[in-house]
Length: 324
Image (cartoon, rainbow, N blue to C red):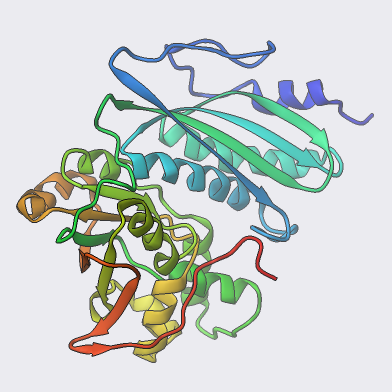
């Protein structure tokens, strides 16, 4: 007998390890009832992943679940927020319980790690898609935004860039990688990004602006520039590249271009005033995350890509959801 919506909710989503004290009422009623800590703002972000656009329909559901939740948690990290709750809207062609079981394995593993409680959502019939809304807390007046940067601030990124694009190229069969260990690493970095929650929290009071890299650094940095009404100079030789990316693409210039355009990295791009640079390493020390300075903000518009004193005429763009 086919499972109905309520069977699926009860079987796969009601039983979870995280039961937060700030959740007065969760799954089972028309609304969840939640308590926001005094002195905090509620940070909320919604994102959708659609089969064929953000993941292959035959991809491992556990990896899809991790990617879906990680991408949303990354938005909270970019604001310096602490994750708390998530709601899930899941659309499926049929109630595939084998798929659901694997999906929940990946979803709750990451939710448990960040102490995030599933508080509600919806299941319905249709093309395979996942929509999540995450909620978190940030002390009043301390949220990181895109609009606080000033001319002269330094541009930083966490982690390393380009691996997600390399993993996607392997996944889509656009390139052949003979080294199985390298192939596995790049695929994992595409699917299993780690949201920089601790790094985002540590940047509060130090960074002047921040966002997460979801559509490519060359595109996402532009959002800070637009909101802060500034321009940027980026030294491509300072882009943090992994050994795996350079093994995948030994030509340095092409590897740098991948790092600039690679989407779904979910690293943080942020800016730091000169007077705060000395405290940055200390603030990030407990997070296990390295940050690299790649350039500086200036007056004007646009992004200048530089190598030493040479202006590069690279024509790059990030991911566009509506591009043909």
